[in-house]
Image (cartoon, rainbow, N blue to C red; front, side, top):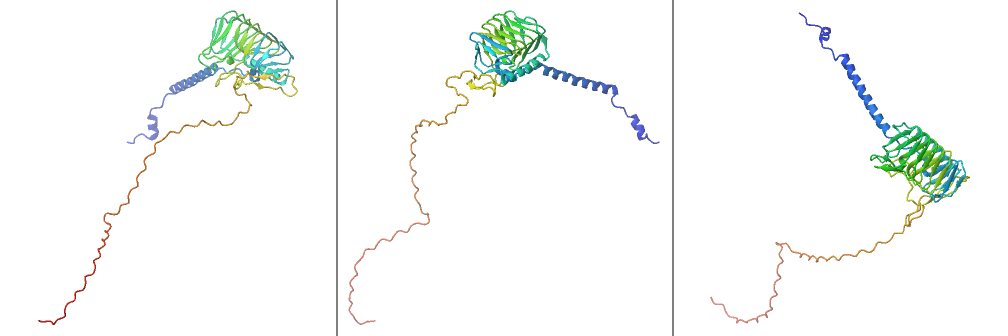
Length: 356
């Protein structure tokens, strides 16, 4: 009797996995991939890059219409105005001053770009109308209308990340009351704090503020207010009164802010040809004894002081080895000279006959 043919044997073999199981496993694999994608997407959203200020980042104060100052105000960066032409009160700008020239125009254009970037960042939370006494971790916070610092401190906590970025989107105005303070803790840096203000901003008397203020209209710093950051107004005026504005770059190896200047030495900044801006010495005063960029450095080599030589005792001279002859080749002793003996006198014998 013949056995089953090949087609019968194939029919009798057990089939592979059911399609339902294969589909289930495929579905689980797709779900895992989707979960990982969401995870990485969430991580990417959590890390916000700083707002790129470009050339506007070199300015401590930038205004649209006018700059007005009362009292001894000092700013460590540049002072700019465009399209306005009037700066009154002579604030002390340790950087350069640019009035209605191409440099100020470029800075205003970069400010508009930075303002739009900050305004369009997706927010992670809504900010209340009064921030006093609150703590904030890195992220983007949105206040639909006005924002107030009524009293006390507002704390920005970087949680150990020196690149942590804080962005506050404010629909209309921002006001800080007298003696209010913005505190930075756990590695937060002023160069990574941005306040995007839809209208005008006011810093109260003797308040201490941190970050770059980008206002669409105007900015007022009342008497004694201090700022580590920038006051940048697009269209309106910047009004100052006995203020100190420190414009610091981020620490090395971190992001945000313009490139740091080297050495703190003064460098002369000139305006573009045909510009009406007034060139002013840029940078902080040089520290006495510090090298000024561009100054030739003496290349004379100072001879090193002579080093006293150590007396080293001489080694005794090694005696020369005597040349020895081979043991088998002994020198023959010279024969002694014989004593000369006088010749013996010859004895005459008598001649006789030989007898047998």
